[in-house]
Image (cartoon, rainbow, N blue to C red; front, side):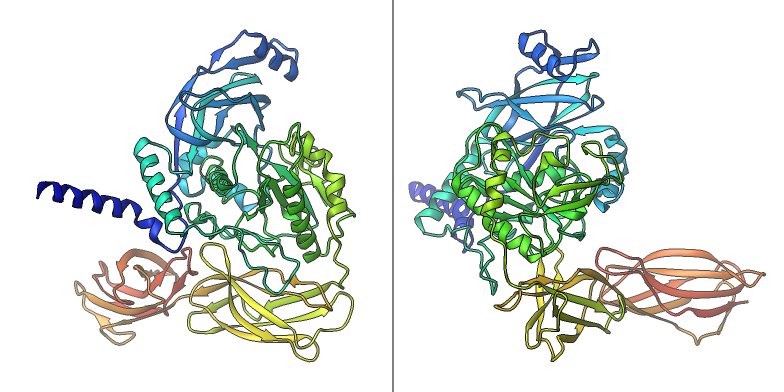
Length: 610
């Protein structure tokens, strides 16, 4: 019996471990981040001298090499950040326990990618410390961040750095997205993946629907690579797509096709959690096997502002190739995927792939051009064309002329889609009146075309909320009911007569409906020392509301004497208040703005205390 009990226990444990593999979705390990603070040692080797000579021939240049760093857990991706020493050259190498060191890989510093300085919500959020508080913001002043490097499976890391000045507070940020951080993690992940494979539950990642527009290549969506482990800090921002920048990531070790989604998750976690950005920096990522991944949230068909080319993010889209292309180029499969993606994306925004475009630089520490300067670039450019970086590597950069020739221009006429709202702030329970029109560029309206009205969900992904058809002149209108703030847009998926297009996105704010009443009629008199009871409703429901009391001054104005949080239960508020002094008062209930709704206040209720 004891043996049977033990077998039953083991069977139960196996079922518990394997349970996630039995779902209809592929098993995705839970990512983890961890950090180490390291103290580098001065290095006098020939390798360090080489670094010093590449940066500058100056006695003020510090050439350093760290000790071999034994990470507390196995990692798949690693990067550095520090204070001071902004001008630096950084190399990293990694190794697995019992294995050989990878080659030294040069890593971009501060960072090859980044938000637009002074213009983006992302930069302002980073200065505020994002979701991590003002203390982190103060600590981030003067901070330098490196690009991340994909390590595959590694236990040890070592770095070399040459910098003008000595870096301080050096920190290594590690990410594991493959479920291999510890021995128990590796056992659990191996069992779950084995069970999933046996049961045939591992779904293909590359099955994204192309929809009505047949030019859209298969794209692995954020849901498919499990972006739930890297949610955006803020709602997406939108700009223009005048051109595309081509990037590369850095890999210390080679990777297989099953690693690509884990690489995207790891890069997203690093950009969000170490750099402090809102989301992954790139709009798209492409692996060497030809798989295309959706990057930053906000809609693949939208001009989502990323953090991929400092000084040009509001005017461009960014596509990063997974891997290092310093000496060798992108594979044929990867180059073909880039061409298919660019053929669709540039046509969607009316950009001719062989053209040259003019951008206005908004500056930044890595920008090659001063703020305000007009810059002429190819519609398909390498990152190094706009910023001071080696990205996308000499090998891939040399392939850009061929890539441009592979991108097919869409010969269908362009179309323009406009969308506006009668009011961009509405009261809960009322509908937003949306209206727009679809027409050929410089031509007549397009009738009887299907238009999708889309709203961005809390995870930044557009969801279709309505489908309607244009009228005789291309016009359309729709009443949209919203309970919460939403960014909305419209799109047309194209047909034989016109290219697909999308409207500009804009935000509609929803003000909650708040009512309040007293246990006495308005203008009633309350005896001194008495207590007044306030009740009210809040829609949509909130966890807390505010009791707001203002006392009338001798000048006729009012001064706030109370702002107290009060609980809301099932959308109802019941609270009492005891005025301290005789006089005139006004009493209201309200809610402050949050991530879901605008602020709101009830109508004021007059009260006299004698």
